[in-house]
Length: 520
Image 1 (cartoon, one colour):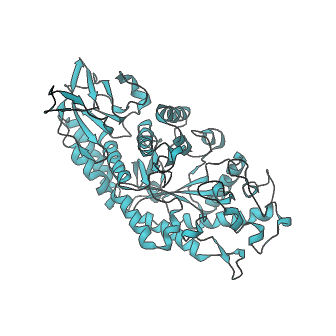
Image 2 (image 1 turned 180 degrees about the horizontal axis):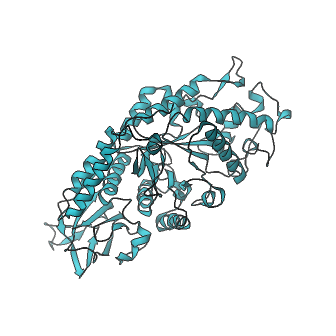
Image 3 (image 1 turned 135 degrees about the vertical axis):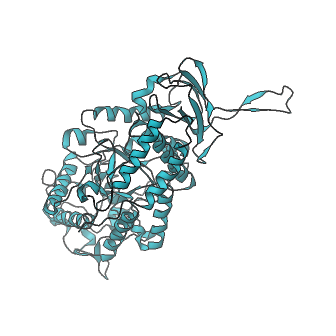
C-alpha cells in the first residue's frame, strides 16, 4: 500500500500565503488576474484525499510538462540540505526531522539522497551485515541501514518533500589520498573481495586494491553488467541491493530516481539499471520516473536517445555566468519537441572550495536555473555549496515568492523573452515574464537595463526585492520611462553624501541578487 498524506497541507499555507498576500498588493491588479488566482485556489481546494491516487502521485505535470506535478498540483521544486546521503542522518532522527522542518519552513520541497555509506567516521552504515571479525556477509542485511532509509522516506512524505534518489555514485569506490577528502572508500567497501565472506578476487572482476581516481578510470564495480565485464557474481549482489532500495521506495509516491551521480561510466551501465528499475516497477504496477546525470552537462542525450523521463543537468553548475545560463538554455532547447522536467539537484558555489567559484556565483546559479525554466533546483552541500544555511533559506523564500508571484509556469523564461531587454551586458540580468501582465528581472550583481513593457496597459509600476533578506525595498512606484513602452531599471542604487564638499549623489555598491517586479 503506497503511503501518502492529505495534500491540503501545511506546505500549501507556507508556500502560498506570503506570495498571495504580496500579489494582492499589485498596483492596479486587473479583475481578470484576481479571478484567475481565485479559480486556481478553488481548483486547489477541490483536490482532496478522494482524488484518484494516480493523479495525486509525483509525475511530470500534465498541464505544464516541463515541471513536476504532485498532489494534483504543478510545482517548482526548490531545495537545500547539508548532506547528500540524507537518510544516514537517521542515526539521529531528531536531527533529520529538524533539518527537514527547516527546509519546509523556508518553502523548500526537494532533497537529494545518494545511497552512499562512505562517511563511516560520521556514523554512516553499510547495507550489509558485518560480522565480529570485520568481514561482511553480502547475503545478510544490516537492518540499521534500511531503517534509516525508511525513516527518510516517511518523514519527507509527511512534509510533501520530494526525494531524488541516486542509486549509484562512483565516488563511493575511490581509494585516493591525494585530495582534500582523502578518499579510501574501496579499501573498506563491503564489495571489495578482501572485505567479505562471499567471494574472492579470483571469483570476480573486482580488485582488492584500486588507486585510480573516479575521473580517470571507471571502477570495475561499475562495469559488472553483461555488455561490459560480465561479472554475474558481483552483479547478483548489486541487483539484490537495488531491488531492496526499490522495495522500500515503491511504498511511497514522492520519489524520483537517478541512476548515477555525475557518471563517467558507460551509458550502457545506466541503461541496464534503468531497465532493471522499470521491470521491478512493472511487477508492482508502479510508475517510476528516471533520470541520468552524466559527467558533462547539460547532457540531455539520456532523454533524447535512451528513453529517460527527465533531464539531470547538475554538472552545468561547474559553469560560470552567462555561459552557465546559455548552456542550460541550449539543453532545454534541444528538448523543445519532447518537453520534460529538467532538474539540477546540486548547485555548486561556496567560499570554502575555490573551484566552485564562490557563494555569490552559487546563488546566481540557482536563480539562473529557475529563470531558464528548470523544474527543480537545490543548493549543493558544504563545502561545495552553501547547503541549508541562513542565506540559502532566504534565497529559497525569495525564489518561492517571485515564482508564485509571476506564476512561473504561465510565464516565459529568459531565453524566450530576452528581446524585451535592451542595454544588457552578459550575465547582467535575467527576465521571466508574462508579457502584458507581469515581469520579473533578476540582477546577480547590479546593472542598469531597459525593459519593453509596451504590451502592458498603463504606465507600469516597479518594486524591488532584496533576496538575501526577503524584504521589499519600499512601495510600488511608477517605473521610469525612457520612451513609450520602455522603462529603465537601475540595480545599482544611489545615496546622498551630506557632509562631502560637493554634497552630491554617489553610486553605492551593486545590489547583489535583487529582483525587480514590474506590474500594472
